[in-house]
Structure formats: C-alpha cells, structure tokens
Amino acid sequence: MSFEDTGRSMKRQALMVGKESREDSLADCVRDALNSYFSQLDGHEPSGLYQMVMEEVERPLFQTVMEHTGGNQTRAAALLGISRSTLRKKLARFEIG
Image (cartoon, rainbow, N blue to C red):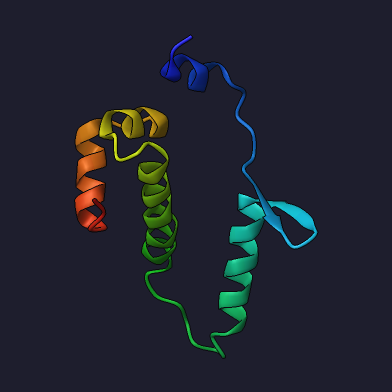
C-alpha cells in the first residue's frame, strides 16, 4: 500500500492533543483558545477573526508537515491532500522553506 493509499483508507479521526494529564481534540483546543481570546477583549469587538485563526493554524501545520516529510514537497502535498502548486503558494506566503 502506498503512502497516499494509506492516508485515504484510514478513517478520519479527531486529532488529539495531549495537554497536561488529559487529551483534548484539536477542536477543543481551538475552542479553548478562542474562549480565552474573547475573555481578554475587555468589551472590544474582534476584527478579522477568521483570517487570524486560519493563519495561526496553517503556519504550524505547514511547518510541521514540511519537517515531517524532510522538505519533500510532493510527499507534503499528498499528506495534506492539496496540489504541489497550492503547497508552494502557502509555503511562500508563510515564508517556509
């Protein structure tokens, strides 16, 4: 079974993040971070929240995948399920590589 086939055949599971003595899903961690962010606004309205969250998640995603694949863009794109051209655009945007 190839690298790509393995990824396709696996059931989708929530990403689990170890946090102290408990495990939270990635969604729980995002929810906690957003609730903390909102509580610190002190009555101010957030702006550009979607873009901020996406950048906060995408940058470490692409950095970690590139490290995991040893910088191999073909493997990284396959692992992410995106085209190499999209991967290259994201890497350039986040100045990775």
